[in-house]
Image (tube, rainbow, N blue to C red; front, side):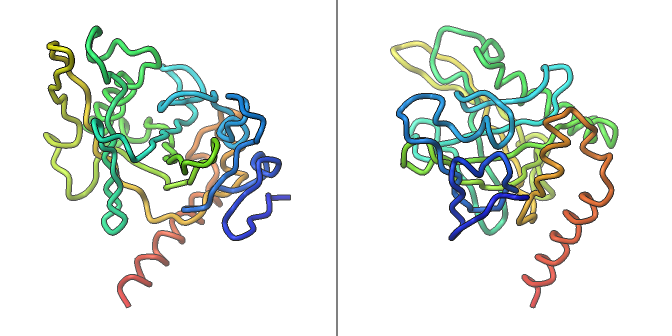
Amino acid sequence: MEGCVDGRIVPFAEAARSPLIVDAIYQGDRRGSAADDPLPRLLGVSNQGGFRYRGSLEDLSLVALKTSLDDPDWPDSLDRESGTFIYFGDNKKPGGGLHETRRFGNELLRRFFERLHAGDSGRQSIPPIFVFSGTGEWRDVRFLGLAVPGGPDIENFDDLVAVWRSSEGLRFQNYRARFTILDVAEIPRVWIEDLINGQDPLARADVLELLLRQRNRKKCESAV
């Protein structure tokens, strides 16, 4: 049975059975430790960091991006009308190379956009990317949506850019990435379980048909 959503708030105990619903809040536990994080229950990923993934760098099953949306130095942002999501990488202080970050976040970004520009075969190898924001309450998160690198109105030269910053007199680079949040209101739990178990995200035709139907329905509604 899928988890119950009461007012779009999913209790921590229900996270492992719940679908992902855009703008729903997924509560963490209230014990006051890193284990309170709901993302391990939701997606089987780690409990810390902005970049979290399942699998290896060479064979990713899924990726979770978490943002606070309130860092003035690295202003991640979501345009809810266009779906454009701007996300800054994880090289946020001097002392390391652009791709030499502890959680390999910038290396992931480099690979995503390299595959995006490699044609259909490259795009099909990009794992599903689920975007969350913190809520400011404990370790609760809000699901922002299913994202893809780039977008129809984003030029290739502007979708992933290495920007220069300075801190303590030292210059360094970090990525600014542009994604598009798809018009998909709900991610079925059965598909999430498939991804956690390492199955091909394109293998389940019924789920893909459902996701496509959701996108088409939203487009029709917005055109009325």
